[in-house]
Length: 133
Image (cartoon, rainbow, N blue to C red):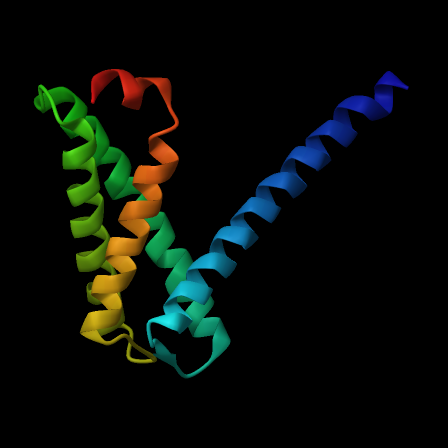
């Protein structure tokens, strides 16, 4: 029984990870459709979301580390506006570079505010975030 337990656990963890990624992509696609994104094909939209997600994750992690190192107080405030700034500039830059995607300016603003607010809400549950702010 132990011979099947470890591989089965690894497969379940991989499937869970893939499921979480798919749910995140579906949520971002839904939000972008609500704010008026126009695209030629679904594969371009999914590619846009994956590219945006990878670059945004890296930039947000770097900004969080820099905020933790340099900021004495108001960590959540700085993280919220850093995430909003990163999200907006990255979203609009990628949409300008990809000819198959068009996102209106107000859509980028609403998306950036929405994702920064969700990030703040998810981050507010951590003990570290509550203790410092």
